[in-house]
Structure formats: C-alpha cells, structure tokens
Length: 190
Image (tube, rainbow, N blue to C red):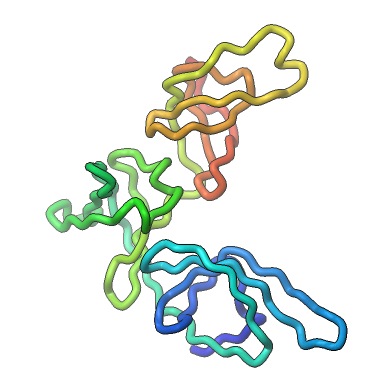
C-alpha cells in the first residue's frame, strides 16, 4: 500500500531507500512561497540508527509490512541479547545492543516482549509501555528536599540509572514508561 507525506505519523512503518523505517516524530513545516515539508525523525529498523529527513508533498512510500510475535527475553552476554519464541523456548535468536537501542536498559530476564518482523525476519523488539523494576541503589533523601518535589538518580535491577522523586528508596518497586524512561509511580514500598 502506498502512503504519502501526510501519512507519516509516529508509529508508522514505511520503506525508504529499500529499508524499513519507523517514524518517531514529525513536524509539518510551511514556509512562505514554498511547498510544505514534513520534517521527520525516523529509525532504521535494520540497524537501529536514527535519521532526520524532510519529505515533500510529492514523495510517495510503500508501507512496510510489519508483523508482531510474542517473544521472551532470556539474558544478555557481551552485548548480545538472547530471546526465544514465547511458545517454543528451543527457537532462540539474538539481537545486538546497537539494534535494540535504549530499550536494553529495561530488559529483564523472562520479560515477554513483542518481536517486530519484516519479511518473516525478526528485526527488533518492542517493550511493554509500562514495566515494573526494583530499585537496587538509591541515595537517601535529605530532610527538607522533599518539599520542593526534587528528583534523585537511582539504579534499577537492570543497571539503568533513572531520575525518580526523592521519596523512592532502595528496595522499592517502581513503574516506568519504557518509551521515554520516565518514572510513573511507586508500586510497592520496601
């Protein structure tokens, strides 16, 4: 199916120069005396690299035929991330840290994620939008700090360092938005 410049919205997959891309952000730009352009931030789904391109009204693309399949994250070893098919643990595959991108910070063993398939080949994964993590290191809040609603950095069980409210302590279980890495809420207090 063909799509045009106005169909490029965040979350849309399309073929550009023979490869599948995901649209991350778009910005419609109208300049005086010129045709409008769509400033597009996009991610190459085969190598994980980010690009910014401007597209014209006359540009036409093929929509990428993307499928999803449930897979389970097993473990990582030397920047190789190993997964298996949810219903067939014998069917294992690995993806590189470069390809997965920032999502590696939120991969926990036995987490079920969605594999993104292009031409029957797994090209990347998509984490659940919200996931729970245990805080393994947190500096203590200093009395008086909490009134300003400040933040501090904590370390999660996956090794990721994120900003959280000052009342979060070591051992707490917190919920994060995996798409932007932001704290959502405390699920369980230590």
